[in-house]
Image (cartoon, rainbow, N blue to C red; front, side, top):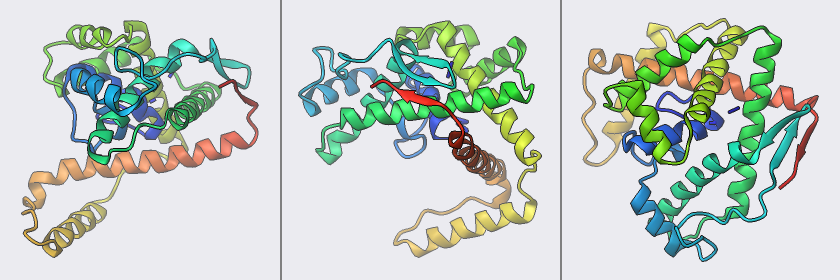
Length: 261
């Protein structure tokens, strides 16, 4: 099961899983767009090796001591196999950032954050199941195809092959996509799926223009019609994140959670 974040990430936790797709494809965004979702394999390996003395010979994080069952959420297990790919991707992102900050990745903090994200994803998936929300194989296939196109790959098969080279199996990738889609449908069920109004989109655009104008040598913002779809996607993503995070906080109150790290 599971984080965490494709280019259309629904929240920080789903963002963690999506980053595996983007990093595997060598596509995606700049360092500010999806948090832990940018990972260049060779560059990150060398940077993590220099930034973190506890990293192993391959330049990755220290995986010793991670239990087979990382956490239990209402009786459901979050396994080491689910945890490790997400944790490694988060570590690589932190190691890449260390090149500029000079601060080595805090592996303990990253472990706890990864576990917390996976727990949140499990809580949301359980709530989706309780509400009778399901994701079909066809929906997963369609999302994989969309992600392939977004990352300029010819097919979902090519996408899965790229992901597998980064140590994530097809089964794991499909599970991550399923979780993302479940969360999106759960949020739609929670808030009615109301999208932003045209007035709200205009307000976001005007604010961006004002911020750009206030900066010295500020970037020129394209006309509204040219960026409207991007603004709408961003607004929807932020709304999903807001609703999902609020739902997670509520679900945690009555959840039986054990972390074994």
